[in-house]
Length: 313
Ligand SMILES: [Fe+2]
Ligand SMILES: [Fe+2]
Image 1 (cartoon, helix red, strand yellow):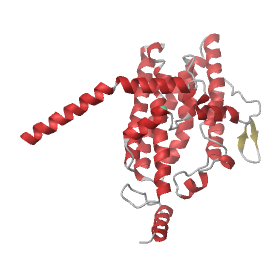
Image 2 (cartoon, helix red, strand yellow; image 1 turned 45 degrees about the vertical axis):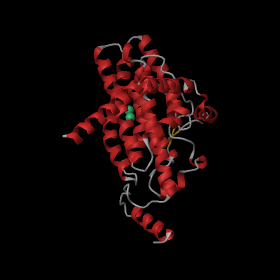
Image 3 (cartoon, protein in one colour; image 1 turned 180 degrees about the vertical axis):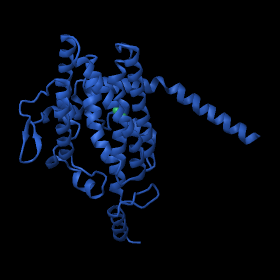
Image 4 (cartoon, helix red, strand yellow; image 1 turned 120 degrees about the vertical axis):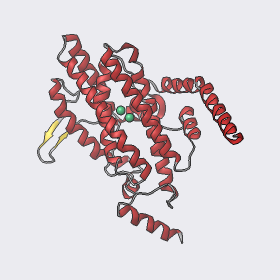
């Protein structure tokens, strides 16, 4: 079959909502876009464990500690499903991990911000996992089969993450004046970086059109960001707290909340590696990888021994 016909058949499948599977023919650019997106997503799950892992030993109660450990563990699982999904496209896990450690691959810029107080664990769950869910619910219907299926389970866990975050803020919001202040401060610091999680504006996003046509994405960055704002404005009322944006206002004509301009200079600085914690995060990942070398070697040696024993039997 000619390339043109293959491409036509491929697009027809997508239009009919038939999933693309690993052994199916696909345009090289589709493969590349998926590898980039899935591996970035996997890296985000793994690097995302760092700011929260920071608080496991300082959680205020046994219950909070158990919840936080479970959440961080879930994120590790998400990273592993996603690395596996990316591997079905012909890339190796070693390659992806090397690209993360060398700084070549990107991960969500949100994890380059520090977690300064306990309230940040609540704000991260509510806002960061909340923003992630909007993206991920849409990805349950993405056109590449292994990615879509990984997202189904991930979404169930993410909604637990968001609820636990909100509930933890709710307790603080009903606490002492200091706890209330800590809650508001965490919301103030995480609000804008959470809005940045949806990426550049549609007018500036280079990959958007093709990704929509291939149904890798089903909603644009701006659409998702708007749904997030609409949701958060209502939820913050239940906390009796405010969002740090004087321009937030209901727009009767569009039936959406208008909001202020994101600081795009900050966004690009963090994406390019100059956020508050970029260096620290990569250093922590590299250190963990180095320190885990003996575990990987031991597992390989054990697998080889087992295989040799089975062969001899
Ligand atoms: Fe996750
Ligand atoms: Fe999560």
